[in-house]
Length: 294
Image 1 (tube, one colour):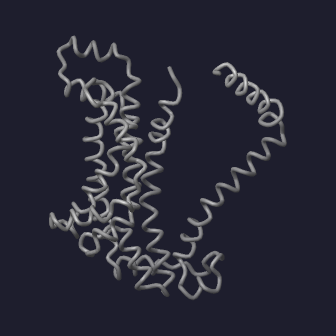
Image 2 (cartoon, one colour):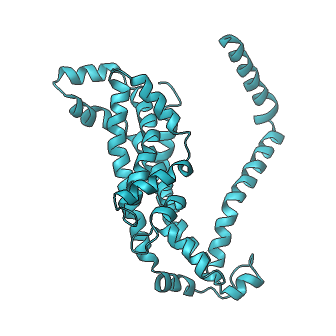
Image 3 (tube, one colour):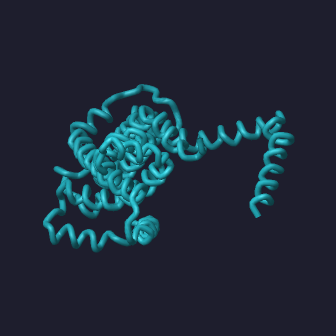
């Protein structure tokens, strides 16, 4: 069975090299597809940024045009009218706490799943995989009742606790998969040097597994930062509401002020873009590190 699959792959690779990737027409086709795909991603962002420097009347009359008289008034209004600075702070408190908790708890659990043998290990791994199939929408009612019971609604913990729990299965599976590839000889050498389990985790496995931790941290931060659904249900008070809730309020309260709306959207997107640009190399390294056996 394996040999047939290998033969098919080899045939496909030869076909690509002979008739597609090495031909001029094939390269042009690839560049056209990639260019069109890039435009679908870049165009909405460019549209938002351009219109954020226009007055609302100009957005209606020439929504795709370059601003004739660029203005920063929309951004000034965003800070003065809707207190976007406080919402930024709330988002970073919530998302930062979620990332730290997920990496700490997920890292310890992943180490146990990857390097320790214990009863029900297989069952726990199956439950972790199964939990990834349950959407957040299906759990929001019991989560909301739990938060009410603990008197945590409209507090930071109302989002930090559910988001941490929801992201842990993903973190454990990714990090444990990476740790499982680390040679057993390193573990035996650390054991011979007198390392206990926790010291072995912090001194040996954590430094080696940093790419997987980085990848998980980036994904968890983005998911937490963009989690509008849970934020609308569990945190609605302005004092603790993250940026996505503020954006939702702006669209409902200032629906005709298109300049303010586009400025608020741009200010919501920019931190994520900056974060991703700085973490891009680490993300790519972590995402591809387990793809090739060394």
